[in-house]
Length: 392
Image (tube, rainbow, N blue to C red; front, side):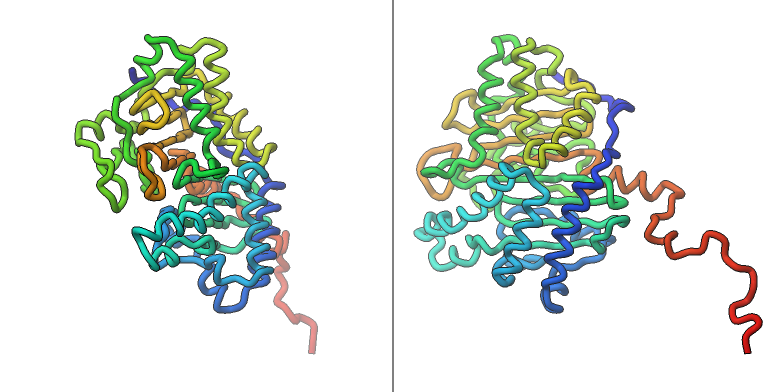
């Protein structure tokens, strides 16, 4: 079943978050002020560098752009961590740093297959920080931290509006000992699926095969339609057909799955829990603003779609789609070279309209408003007299 999504006029992206923006700006200033010239050359980019600003791939690249943690002093690393913590809730920050630290264990899990090379591409210090434009109380700028299974992107417009997507967290393996940072996202999806009756399940389950990765991949700007890849990156452990890809396709204005309005009150509460799990990666007061924004957009028209197996331990996937909102959860790949299926999670929160602040920037550039940072240096009524008149 597909639902047509019309973006309502009540869905306002211009949520005033000046306090939040200022906390990130202060943390960014503290880090940048402690970097030397060579480090700044790696960390700073022009805001207009679109290709770089939108490069949010979460694989451990060999030629990273940005300043990695491992090239920072201890003090600088603490300041970088404080910047990350300023952008996330404490539980969200705990998820991120646990995923980053687990690279040390993943290195050892990969050693039998990758040998000494594992020490290079599985490294807890290989997370790059990049800044676009100058962090300023009245200006537009952005920053990101990206590395294996953690990609956060924040765009601050006019010093008061914040775009927080794309925001990605992953886990390989999904569970290993005490490491299970995304188990709650998985559990919430299963709780909702298991609460549906047979008819509702028929609407929610869009295909019996899960994608090998999230459907929208890491495209820099979502189009009207997106198809998943046919295999997992770099491996052929899990391959799907062109028919599978078509069935799993994301369509911007025609969402697949079960609409919230077709759920009972108890089911709808579980549905909101799924959504809140992703939004709560942000600080509580900011998450509350986003929840209010989505409720104004009509959560009843948001849809829940499931693909793959309806039981744990087998490849499965779900997504929630609504106006200016998309989350995807995927657990289909093997993880860390361990035996068994579905032990490698990817999750992502995207805003099809406002990833990287697209809509906010469009409104910003379309206005006749000059930023205060410029007008504060200009006379309210310039003098008509030539400078120096009556002197000499």
